[in-house]
Length: 42
Length: 302
Image (cartoon, rainbow over the protein chains, first blue to last red):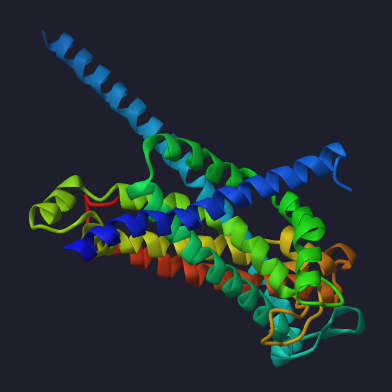
């Protein structure tokens, strides 16, 4: 029972990692391309 | 009395004829895409088969050097499949796990923030991804693996994985969300926890949809041209290492075709490569439609 409860807490945290990778990828693509576009990054 | 009956019959006939004409016109319009598709297939196959007829088995040789008249497509097929396989290796775990998180665990506000981001990732033009690969991914790959150039198969795979992620995430999360609530309630009523329900009921039910999303992602990746052409390094060779430059079918077409004159061998070879590419995507899409047929009716509809 205790082990089940631990799993229930671990799984959402573990699954949030790939979701944050997706968000991070989006932000990196937008920021890099955007900053290059306006000439901040060279 | 008789006259009015004839008039009614005539009116009915005219209406029926008009209805039939509308149906006929709509059928003609709706069959137009099929007609265009058939024309494209016939044209590409006709031009492409000329290359196969002229080159024979040489078309599947191991040397590709269009400038010197070597048109072996094996390194290109190998490059395309390797790069796409690499992309899917990255995109499948991230995409499917993100989809499970978004559909099952993420609070509504987070879902409302992340989903538009994923959709925007799909809307970014491929040339932007190509530029992103050139200015951001390639230098990192070069530094990390101490390579002479960052334009290697891994760079293409990474970019393709970013491009296939939206397809996998959005379709998978839709299919997972579409699993009926009764299934979950029944599982929870039997004493299963949320994760046990997701693992034992939701994912197996949504599995055909998830597999279909992966195959659609594959379809997008194998047909991608500009981003791959910019990042792959354009060196046609059969290699098992993702840290070496490769060449792909789409990239070869985009490099060779603008310089090919009508009637030249390279002209026909480009169409021949198109035929090979078409055969690959056609096979993959057929497999996808077979898998989608296995989805129980009324459970998940894409």
